Figure 1 (tube, rainbow, N blue to C red):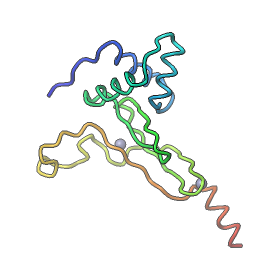
Figure 2 (figure 1 turned 180 degrees about the vertical axis):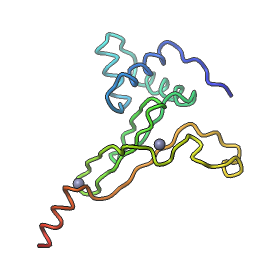
Figure 3 (figure 1 turned 120 degrees about the horizontal axis):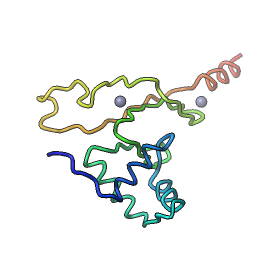
Figure 4 (figure 1 turned 45 degrees about the vertical axis):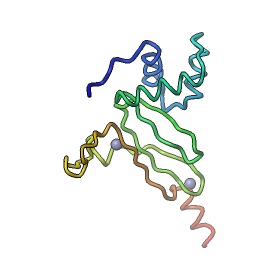
Length: 136
Ligand SMILES: [Zn+2]
Ligand SMILES: [Zn+2]
């Protein structure tokens, strides 16, 4: 199935995501559209994001607070997340590589991958220092 050309409204969402410095939630996109006098319902924003995802143009991931954030598909970014202070820092590369993740057709069982999410949870350098401090 070929990617469909998004409608102007979805095109606008995609443009906002591409211009954004980081990932945006649906609420943030909703607010930015309002700021640009292009206000629309939050439900419309969610529907547009879903269509963009299905067209293979937008990726999403769920934050630990349950919020979903969106980014353009081409921005393949991953994060290191501290289980203690909750801070998150970008990983400088994608350890998974291509969109098919090196999985062959047999393993994919006909599934067509669009995007992946990947994150590493652990202790950030600052929290590790605090731990050492407590032990000493
Ligand atoms: Zn930390
Ligand atoms: Zn990746």
